[in-house]
Amino acid sequence: MIKIIFSDMDGTLLTDDNRLPPDFDEVVAELKKRGVIFSPTSGRQYFSLLKSFTKYENEFIFIADGGTFALQKGKELFSFTMTHENVAKLLRFAEKNMPGVAPVFCGKKFAYLQKDMVTPEIKAEIATYFSEVQVVDNLEDVEDVSLKMSFFDFTNHAKETILDKLLAEFTEGFDIVQTSPCWVDVYTPGVNKGLAVKTLQEKLNVKPEECAAFGDYMNDYEMLQSVGYGYAMQNARPEIKKVAKFQTVSNNEYGVTVAIKKFIADGLI
Image 1 (tube, helix red, strand yellow):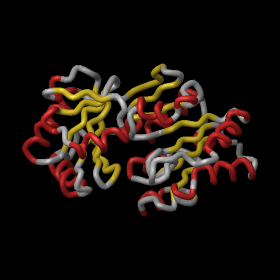
Image 2 (cartoon, rainbow, N blue to C red):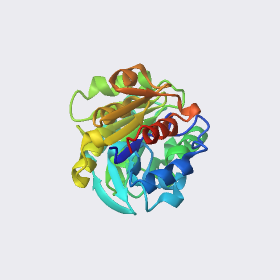
Image 3 (cartoon, helix red, strand yellow):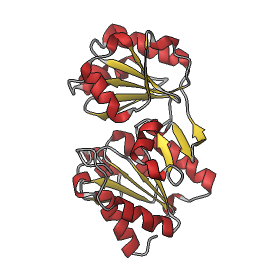
Image 4 (cartoon, rainbow, N blue to C red):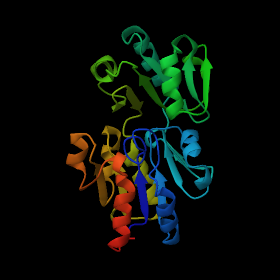
């Protein structure tokens, strides 16, 4: 029986115009009745997830910032952090080698932008994924705990302008993942949504075969391998479809709730 359902947000649970499935509340009510935990598992900031799920603040387990930060009822369950030394290495490399790319220091309290990199494009994009943001003179001076570093290219060529350059320079010491055509996230090695899922399974004494997960992009890869019911969206990257055991319809066809309703019909929850 499925006890926990993990779901990515963008390109997965949310439609392309940032809407939840129309039957989401109905499905969540049924999950609650059956004792199943729902866990938004996203690259988004925790406070951004709360904004999307205000009425579920005390019901969901939130896994934010790509698996680095997990909270339940506002209390931290676990976190995986990055040293300030490694943040500085990334920032100095980006300044010299990635012109026009905006770095985002993703902390527990805020996401931080450097004043000289703030443009209308980055302000509009950042609002989608981060609701608590501070603009600072120098990211290296930020004293908040670093969960990850994110890099944004508003031209949608993140592979060429960010990913390839970082992978060529940093062959060890970081895990580097493209999360959309314009975003690349950098983590401490071994940190990803899959590690977060496994950590939560251990804390709650839940087996992988008692969990389901939904995803569409490369930062969902390990998560789908960490559960018994790993689902790729119809709109997912080919690599995600290959690693997932199952597939559902696209995010715009509400594939997550479609699959959950089938779980209920099949007696899996």
